[in-house]
Length: 339
Image 1: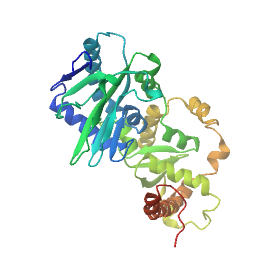
Image 2 (image 1 turned 90 degrees about the vertical axis):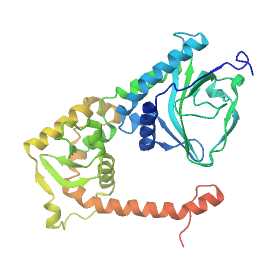
Image 3 (image 1 turned 60 degrees about the vertical axis):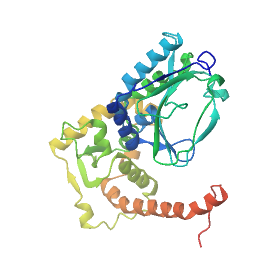
Image 4 (image 1 turned 45 degrees about the vertical axis):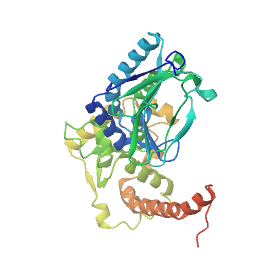
C-alpha cells in the first residue's frame, strides 16, 4: 500500500514511558464500561462529570503535540479541531472488525484520527495518524490475554464539533451538582479532609464527609458526596413513612453544635462548588430559600434514613444479581419474578 493511497504516519516512541504510565493510572482508576463487550473507556467529559476535572491535565500537552503533528503531516495547519479524546482499553475477547472511523452518518465530520498502530505490532508510546475515511480501513484483532490500552483522538475541520468548547462549558459550570442538590434541601457539606489544605477540593467530595444544617452537624460519616446525596434524596422521598417520633438517644446524640472551624471548612467548600446560588435555582427551577422544602427535613431524620437507604439499596442489588442470569440468557432486560 502506498502512502499516497493510504495516507498515514507511524511515529515510534511519540509518548514517553512516563506519559504512558500516567495515562494508564488515570484509566485504571477512572474508566467506565465502553461501547462493546470487554471494552472500557475514559473520556475527558467523563472525568469532569465524575468530579475529577484535574485528571484532564496530563492530556493537555499530548493533545497539542498530536494536533500539531497531524496538521504538519497532512498540510492543514490551523484547520483542525479535536473532536474526541479518550482512553479505550480492550480486554480478553474484545475485538472490532474492518471499518473506517467515519463509517456512520453522525461521524462524517471526522477527518483524521490518531491512536495506537493497527498495522504493526503495538508498542507502548507508538502513534499512528491516518485519514478517517475508507482509505484507511482498519480493525482490532481479538485480545487473547491482558489489556490493550489506546489513547484515541479524532480531528475535524468542522468547528461545531470542537471538543474543547464542550469541555470548557462543563468546566465553567460554577456549582457541583451533588452539592447544589443538597443545598437546595437545606444541607451543607463538611469534608473530613477539609482541614488538610494540601487536599484537592474535588478529592474532598470523594472522601468521607458529614452533613450540616442550621448550625448543627450530623456526626454520622458518609463515604462520599454521592452517598450523602442518595441518603438525603431517599429521606426526601420517604420522610412521611419513616418513624421519627420514637427517636433513640444515640441517634439524637449524633447531632452536635457546629464549631467555628467546622463552619469555616463548610464555607471554604461552598466557595469552590457553590459560587452562584441564583444559577442553581435557575437551573433546577426552584429557589434555594424555599423554607417549606428545607424545613421538612432535619439531621435526625437523615440519621434514621441511613439504615433504610442501605436496606433499599441491598434489595435492589439483590434483585439485579438474581435477574442477570435470565437477562443474559434471553438478551433482554425484563421483570424477573422471584421464586
